[in-house]
Image (tube, rainbow, N blue to C red; front, side):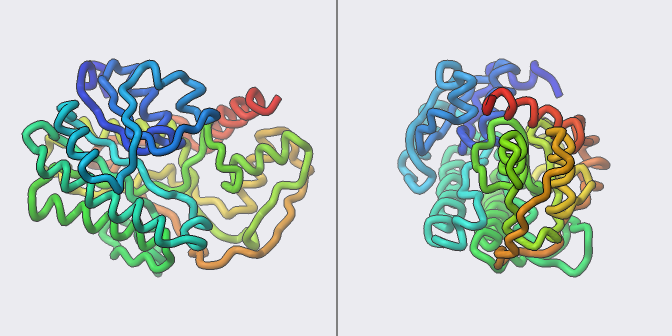
Length: 325
C-alpha cells in the first residue's frame, strides 16, 4: 500500500461517521487523498468528530436514499473511488424495523451504484461493504466466497441483496466493483454499546458484570478495524487487475470466538478476569456459528491482518480507558 496511489485521488466514503468509516477517512487523509464524506446524522461524540475530520474533508449532508444528491455529488466532485460503507448495521435494529434497514442497505446500494454507472467517465473503482451475514446459515465452516448468499433474517437479507446488486452492476454494466465480507468489526470509536466488545469494555471499566444477550455460544469472527481499513485500501489499489475486479473477498484473522470467549478476552485485556458476565439468553433470529476463510485474500491480494485480535483489543481498551476515564 502506498501513499502515492492515494495522493490527490478523490474518494467518496459513505457511512463516514461510523466505526469503519471514521477510520477509513482518517487513513485516507493521512495518505493525502481528497476525501468527500456522505454524512446522514451529525454525531458530535463520533470518532469522526473527535478526530476533527470535518475540517480535513468535504462533508455532504444527506442520505443514500436521495438519488439526485448522489448523482450530483459524484459528478460535481469528480469522484474517482467510492468506498460504500454506509448502512444500518445493527441486527437488533433491523429486527425491530426491517423497512428502514432495507431502505438504507438495499435501496441505498442500488441508488449509489446507478449513480456510479451514470458517472463512469470519472468513477474508476467502487468497493462495496457486504458482510459475513450475507451468506446466511451455511452447513460448511469456514465460509468461502463461493458459498451461496442466503440471508434470511432482515439484516442478513439486506446484505445478501447488497452483494447481489453489486454483482449485477458489475456483470451487466461493467461498473468496476469489488465486494468485501468481514466479520464483526471492533476498535476505537465504536459508541454502539450494545455491541459485545465496547459494551463489555465499558462494563469492565465500571467494574460491572458485562451483559451477554445470547446464551454465549454464538461463534463469530472479530476483526480489528485497522486491519479492515488496510484490507479495503489494498483491495482498491489492486482493482486494475482483471482477476481482482468484480470479485468478492472475505477478510478475517481466522480466529473465530464464541461470545463468552470474546468476553473473556476483553475482560483479560481490561485486567478484570474475575468479572462474570450476566447471560440473558434472549437473542433470536441470529445464526449460531459463522466465520470466514480469508484464503482468497491471502493468495490473490497478499493481504494478512497486521494487528489481529490480541493487539487490536489492547489498542481498543486503551482508547476506551481514555474516553471513559
